[in-house]
Length: 409
Image (cartoon, rainbow, N blue to C red):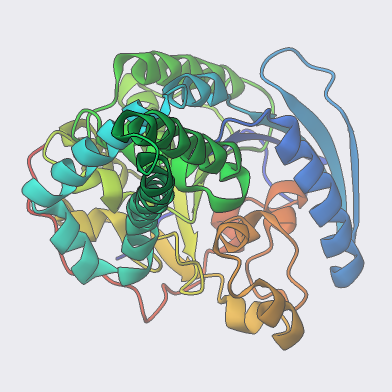
């Protein structure tokens, strides 16, 4: 893969004016209000600034548009002003999660069938076992909950049947149901329903974006397009988890439609991506075409950051190459590792190692032994993503072997 820098930005770096940036953060499948990301940025940014010896301050957002905040960074003697905005699709997520217990078990059957009968499950397992274990977890946990409920119901039935068979049945069925309700109410600890809804949402149309999501992507594209007309230095899109492949489609559409001749540098930072979970499905032609197109574009810089310690991501997998849609002139993404075992101290790694969901968000957090990946330097420092990684070589451990059985565009 060869690297190329995007065409000239609106202002060159090194001028006396503060560096100005717009960041658009696209979260993954998350029903929670975007203030969560502001608080995470505030807390973790303060920790990283203290560790790394720079200054980072936050202020309320003063401009119109999506939910966000303003960050001022004084890093390496240079000042940067950044407006960070969250492109919200949590309402779509909440709607997709409004499934009852019975409907969730039906989702389980449909989603398992989608991945098994298309062959995607077995190809994904050959790619990375970690995220596939994470994908199988909600299925196993929901089956276990049903088994436990059944055993409790059976025990209650055995006691009730000693009085009368109908009494046994009358008390057993509500007991089974109430046990399942108990598990559902405590899913904030188990994440079985949450993850099941996540995978079901991705697989509901075998990889095609549902209409309500396509409509939201169009809105996001218009927001980003407007920022590209401003007198700023960089427009940076950050896509985390399933937000990464949404960012790929948004930017592909944006560039196809044409960019302003004089514009800020345009960049994509994908974090903890799970692109193969979608691109390996038969109807993901839209995403595969976008991966193919964006990977050869000279109009942006695309850096992909994952870590083998993140069991929920397809770590160090080139999402374009493993899908089998890499063009001959592929430029992007530049695959680098956040290397949790090196960038987190042994004590910190020991604390987080088995907290899989927390580790999936580590890309947005502070590192006590930061390497060349620092989320806060990238988003609040006075340097474009292209310049920051201009001489960076891709990870030697990256995976580029095509595995998808579906490669049509």
